[in-house]
Image (cartoon, rainbow, N blue to C red; front, side, top):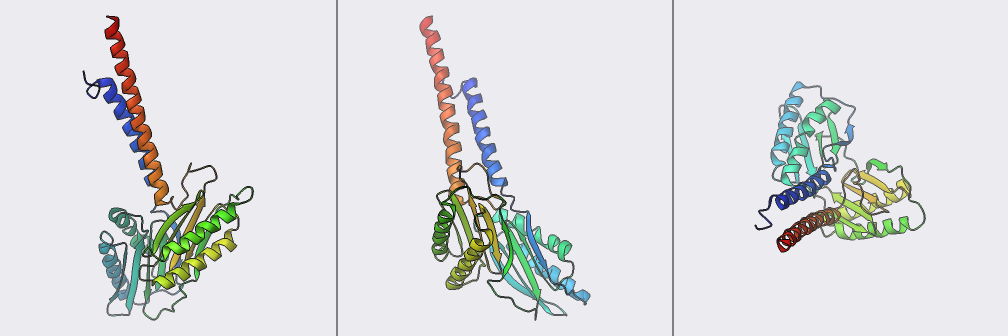
Amino acid sequence: MGFITNPFCLFSFTLFFLAGFGFLQSVKTASNTNALVYKGCASQSFSDPSYSQTLSSLFASLTAQASQAAFFKTSTGGSGATISGLFQCRGDLTNEECYSCVSKLPDMSKHLCGNSVAARVQLYGCYMLYQISGFPEISGVEMLYKTCGTSQAAGSGFEERRDTAFSVLESGVASSKGFYTTSYQSVYVVAQCEGDLGTSDCGDCVKTAVQKAQVECGSAISGQVYLHRCFISYSYYPNGITRRSSSGIGQNAGKTIAIVVGGAAALGFVVICLMFIRSLLKKRDDY
């Protein structure tokens, strides 16, 4: 009897496959890309009912593009003023994940901001913003939101490792079309710029975000800084990857986990089947 067709080996293979698959699924879903990070709503509200219809048209146009693009910007005009808006997904999301994230934003925006003339709703995996024509513009490097981990790094050397990771991040994002993730000695960093931001402006924005993270978060082992036209996130794992930060681990770390889990499952399957075959051969020799 071939070992692949043996019920015991087949059961073992299935068990290890499901265990590995289940773990990878938990890694994928643990990032919680659809969770709310922050919302910003203008204090002024639409006075003309036609604005609400125009805004709904804008939301429909944006959502329709989310399964095809990670960034889209447009404007819609009705009987009242023109409303412009955009959405952007994290660069490591698939088209399906991007659409799933963006499709939640219109209802969330209406629920959180009502008829505000301008609003921005940021989830971990995507964001959407809109504003009525004539609404005051803000600086691309204005800080909209920041959060720092409550845990502080023990001992010395953390800030040096983090700052080295930041330096690599600043260099990498300029040549990566606005999204970059990397790691250095257990410090994982991510940066993304608004989709239509030029290379130079993107680099300047990320550099400003890094400086704010260094000042605002100090020795906190994780942090996120959202500026108007870019964001950065970092997480430090002093004992290796044993958990995910709320914003997700870097792509390289995710690939490492997949390789380790897949290798462990395959190795376990081979070892068990070899032991089973050895047992069968021993019984045959005894006869």
